[in-house]
Amino acid sequence: MEKKIILTGDRPTGALHLGHYVGSLKKRVELQNTGEYKQFVMIADLQALTDNAENPEKIRNNILEVMLDYLAVGLDPEKTTFFVQSHIPALYELPMYYSNLVTMSRLERNPTIKNEIKMRNFERSIPVGFMTYPISQAADITAFKAKYVPVGEDQLPMLEQAREIVASFNRIYKCEILVEPEAVLPDNSSCNRLVGTDGNTKMSKSLGNCIYLKDDEKSVKEKIMSMFTDPLHINVSDLGHTENNPVFIYLDAFSKTEDFAKFLPDYKDLDEMKAHYERGGLGDMKCKKLLNSIMQEFLRPIRERREKFEQDKGYLMDILRKGTEEAVEVSNKTVSEVRNAIGIDYFNDSTFLDKFVK
Ligand code: TRP
Image 1: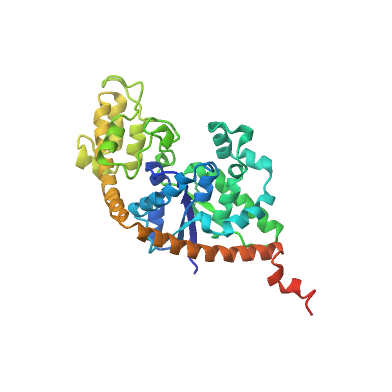
Image 2: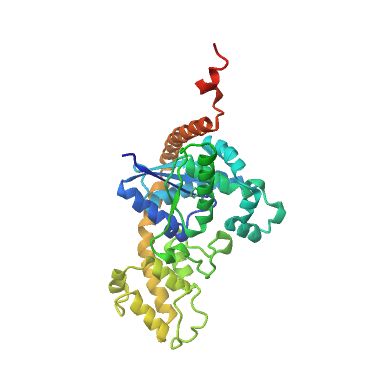
């Protein structure tokens, strides 16, 4: 049986952080290692340009940063195909067909777009490319006939839009060419909403609230030690709240039961530690120290692998070039089928040619 296809990607606007890891990278590595799927991972430079048209340098400088993060977390070029979005002709062509199947009001209802318009004060001056990037993202997914898309919860509206496009396309052109994709969300719900170190729900470079996969030991420690906690937990003896408390959200996402025996044997597991925090008597410093030990142990091997690959950027470019060639080939097949279904594949369509050619 043909392997089911996975596709996902990241905008190359900066190095990847813990939010990227728990939201999607972790799942990609797991899925890759099952050997059951064909996985494509895309560097979404075109999508990054939709709100960085005046800043192409930023995107250019982050292509290899993102590749380094991929390999550092354990994505393996022998098992996963990496490619750059801007070099795939299908990703220019398909959005043109799909955009006829989507209304303006539908785009305006997309919660991600709505929210970003608000955050960036775009209002009516929003770039057309930005407004329509959900259509472009539908092309990213469907050009490869991907069934599974490992993403964080924030991407669900994009998948919804992609499914609607697939359904309309297959219905209008009476075919079953396009595949309806499904999101693959993280197993643990705190990973869906990994907050910034300041408790902000949006992790972003401009807010300075992210821990990067490449951060050195010292900056990781500093970021953890200055993390927001429970504002009502002023004295150690005060009752504490673990819900919406960034330190506990990170512990939910990263700690394992074994970590307690190793780093903080006062508690047998996270539930026991939370119970103590909630009834009062457990200080924030102790919680942060535990989190720091866990994060340092998690990040060390990633950082070391990253440093190793950094010595050989030529190798990274080779992987990307080869992957991109493969991706062009796969997606071009979908484009032919799509043209054929619409009925515009004039020069290859014998039922069309026969009318004129004797
Ligand atoms: N929108 C995604 C993000 O901001 C990146 C992306 C682009 C993507 N195309 C995709 C993710 C296709 C999944 C599938 O992180």
